[in-house]
Length: 80
Figure 1 (cartoon, rainbow, N blue to C red):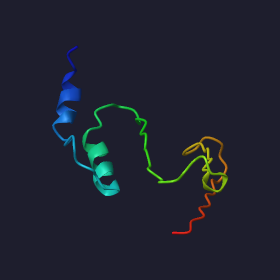
Figure 2 (cartoon, rainbow, N blue to C red):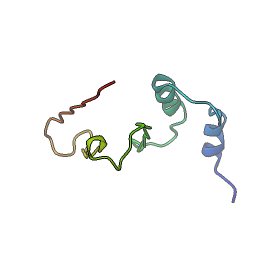
Figure 3 (cartoon, rainbow, N blue to C red):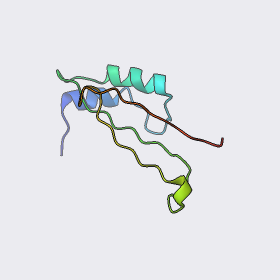
Figure 4 (tube, helix red, strand yellow):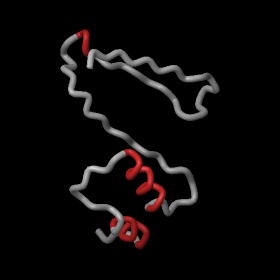
């Protein structure tokens, strides 16, 4: 299935096997954004935890940036 012109133009900026830093990824998002609305961005983190252990469970949910009008507070506990 052929891709659109904007999609193929955005692919020219991306190196397939490169791991980008957060600053580089944000700059890349701004370069490859060809839509007239605010796009959705999905971020994946490798936490290196054992999810079967109760003391290493991570549960979270939040709406960003203006979903409820409430201030979002985040707490993180770590041994490392």
